Length: 256
Length: 360
Image (tube, rainbow over all chains, first blue to last red; front, side, top):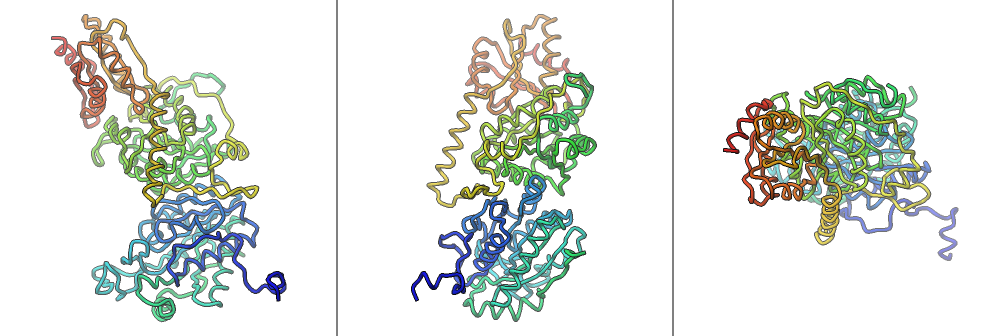
C-alpha cells in the first residue's frame, strides 16, 4: 500500500486532530494534559466551532495551552479564568467559551471565581484537570492531594490535622443551581478516553445551547511529581484516586 | 434626558450615565462605599435593554477586574469602578492589563486609608495610581476630575486614550466628587461598536478566528528574558509617547502670580477658594491643576516654578504629589505641602494661613 492509499478515509484509523498545532508540547511524557488537549481539539472541530471558540488558559502546567490548540486564547491570572470566561460569554453570547484549569488554579486560589461563575449559570464549560498536585511549581500539596499522599510541602504525607481534607469541588458544583452538567471522567485507557470525549462534547453543546454552566473534571496523573512511571501512575490513580474521586455524571439537567 | 439638557446628579451617577452614552460594552463591579451608586445607577437604568451594555455584579473586586481583563481581550469597551480598598484588590489584574497591553477603564472613588480606613473622601491613592500599584514596570493613564461634569466627560476620554495606546486608564476621583450633586450636561449618545468595527480596529481581539485567520493569543507571559525585555522596551516606548502627547492641565490666575498652588481633583476646588481669599489679602497666588496625574505636567510646573517665590501643594493625603512637584522644579523653588488626613477636607482658611506664613 502506498502512503496515499493508507490515508484514504476508509483506511484511516487515526490522525492528528487538525486543530492540534504541529509543535512540540512541554508536557512530560505520560501526562494526561496531551490527551485532554486532543479531545478538546477533536470536539471543537467536529462541532465546527473553530472560528467561534475562545479558550481561557490557567496558571499552572496548562498555562501554555494556547500554543497547542489552534483557536483564540486568553491567558488568565492564577485562578481567575472563570471571571474572564464570564465576561467573554456575556459580551459574545454566541461563542464557545471554555476554561482549562488545574486543581491548584480551580480548587484553591480560584475557588471563589469557580463557584460563583458556576452558580451564576454562566453558559461556559470548565475543564478541570485534577492530578492532586501542583505540577508546574514542582510537586507541592494541592487542595485535592489525598490523605497520606506525599508531596514536597507535605513530605510525610497529607495529615488532616495539619492540612485539612482533599476538596471535592465537583461534588460542590453539582449542588449549585446554576450548573447544568457536572461530571467526573478520566483518560487512562481507550474506553475512558472515549467517555471523556463524549462528556466534553455534551458540556460544549449545553454551553452553546445556553443551558447553564458545565464542569468536566478529568482525574489525571502527574507521573513526574508522583515520581512514578506513566504506567504505574495510571495504576496508582485507579487504586487511590478513583475511590475518593468517583467517576461518572453527578448532574445532567441538559434535557430537563 | 434630551441632548444638552442640564441635570443635577451625583458624580457616581454621572459616571454610570456617561458609560451608557459613550458606547461602553460592559461594566463589572462590586459594591463599596463611596462609589456604589455607579453599579446601582446602571442596574436601575438597565442598559442591556437599550444599548446592549452588559452589567455584572461580581463576587469580589478581584473577580471584577478579571472580568474586565476577559472583556478587554475581546476588544470591547469594558470598565469597573471601586474605592480604595477595592482598588488595592484589583492591582494584580491592573498589572496584567498593562502587561497584556489591553484597553480598559478603572474608576477609583477614593476614601481614606490605610486599611479599611474611612468612607470619607481622600486622595491618598496617588502613589498607588501613578507609581505602579501592582507589580512590574507599568503606568496607568490617569485622569483626575474636579467636578461632576468632568466625571461625565472623562469616561469617553479615558476609553479613547486607553484604546489609542492599548493601555488601562484610571479615573482617579474621590468620595467628595463621587457623592456631591452638581449640574451636568451628559455627553451625547454614541453607539456601541459593531463586531465588524471591533475586528477592524482591534485586529488583536480574541473574538474567534473568523475567516481562518491565525489565532489571537492574549497573554502577559514570556519566559525567555530576551523576549521579555523587548516587550518591556516596547511598552516603555509607548509610555514616552504618552508623556509627550497626552499631558493635560488647567492654569488659573498664574499670569501675575508670585506663589503657585499645585492641586488636583477636590483639592483644586478648594484651592480656587483659597486663591480668592488670599488675593483679597494681597497675596498673588495662582493654581496649576494637573488633569492627567500620569503623564504628569512636570515641564509646565518647572516653567511656572522659574517665576514663583514658592509652591504649595494642597493634597487630601499626607503629601504624595509634592514629591513629583519637587522633582519637576529640581528644588530650585521652595516647595511645601499642606493637607488633611483621615477623610477630613482642608478648610480654605487654614490653607490661607499656610500661604501667609510662606509669604513672610
